[in-house]
Length: 276
Length: 158
Image 1: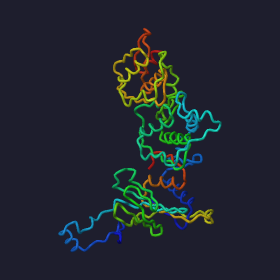
Image 2 (image 1 turned 180 degrees about the horizontal axis):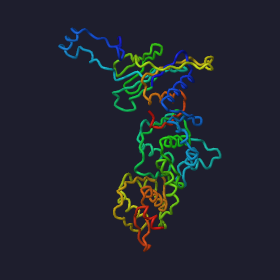
Image 3 (image 1 turned 30 degrees about the vertical axis):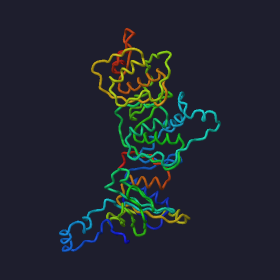
Image 4 (image 1 turned 180 degrees about the vertical axis):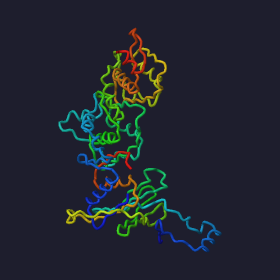
């Protein structure tokens, strides 16, 4: 950009000068609330939907079973907001995967994500102190303007998908989970399930262990790679549900065989056709 | 000690004879080969009581050191801003041990904007801006600083 002021100008003039110069390059800036400004092509601000605004309010409440910070928050009629100082969040052209890891820690939820996400680098540098909810909004909004959506799945999971696949997630969430929970098992502590980019066949022994039943694999399944790190304690049922959602994002599902005793990992479309 | 001053585009050229002699003597007595400085001045902004200089360092080892937005006395990596002169369009910096003065390239001429009428009577100190071939990262960093808001930006911008 080549831009200069003529004569003495105020800060407001400089801001408007830059905004106009950006607009001439089809870049629009829109103020969002009191602490944010969105910069993107025309229509970028519309990506900050009511869902994007509301999700952080839900996420700021830590999920059940994750005791960190809950006592202070629940016992006080006016809980003190923890503030993140300006500059605490400082991503400069950072790989999306790294940003998602930090987001997962901040929101204390387990992310369910396909391996193939559009992977723009993310630049996010906070310039004012933010509450935890505001920081979560900043993450969620910067994902949204980069066409990545976060969808809540129960109290402990968030599904991360390209925005154009959001409708597909609704179908996944409506699907019956195949979990049969083993009784008498203690919840799995946070971080127990920690695998990154492992092939599906390596996940099946874990699924078998959780489910207590052998799982066959259909021949010719895609060699998808899966990532899953439980950020909070999970019951066996919750863990199975999380893995089920993860498989669903790859169009895979574990279904019961007709004999009712064994399980099989199949393509999701096949299970749909079988039902009909 | 008098610092070695040079503008990134105007280094003195010796005569052909002198340069020939220097070549014979060797590089110890010859200034570094003439080339564009790896540190380019991309902007100066003056607002309120602040002055900031914008640089692009094409030889930065880290990408986050490539584009710099620094005030007087601030340092990032090897680069420290010693003085910002908005009127002259010059910034004096120390890069490692070398002190130099950076100026703007003469081309292209920037498009301009002036004061809006409603702000002429404002009590704020008059400011100024000059951006010269400033990349989007620098422009957005400056914009975020000026509006004092966190920028939520799409990455697919020019």
